[in-house]
Length: 189
Ligand SMILES: [Zn+2]
Image (cartoon, rainbow, N blue to C red; front, side, top):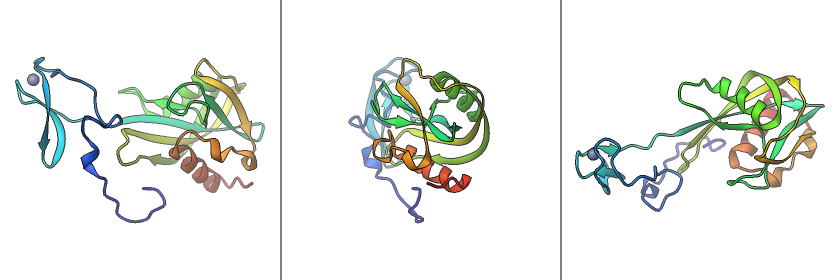
C-alpha cells in the first residue's frame, strides 16, 4: 500500500462469488466444459471444475497510463463510462497480452486524448487489496497533436497543477500517481 510503509496483508476471504473485482465470472470449465463450483484451496475460496479438477486462478489485469502536460497543464479527461463516470483521470487503459506497458500507455494517450506522446520515466505501480487491476503509470511528453477526447470522455482539459480537481478524480490510483508525479517532476502549485 503506497504511503503506509509497513507490511500489509489482504483479507483473502473477499475472494468469493460476491466479489466483483477479483472474480472471473465464469460458470463452466474452459478445459472440459463441466460446471465450476466454489471450494477452499490452500485456505482461499476458489472456483474448481467438478469434472477435471482444474482450478481457476484469476490473474491480475494490467493497465497502463501516462501523465503529460499541455500548455503548462496536466492533461486529464472526464470519463464518460463507469467506473468513475464524470470524474477526471489521466489517459490510460488495459494492456493487451504481449504488449509492453510503455506501448500501451502511448496507444491510450492517442486513443483517449488525441496526443502522440513519448514515455519518459516510470512514476509508479499501483495495486490494491481486493482489486484486480495493477496500474503502471509513466511520465510522458507530448510529441504532436492537440488534446481532444473520444466517445469515452465527456471532456478533456489541461489543468495547471494548482487547479487539479483533487476531489473529482476517478480512482485512488489517480490521486496517488499525480501526487508522486508532482514530487518527482518538481512541479509545484
Ligand atoms: Zn474441467
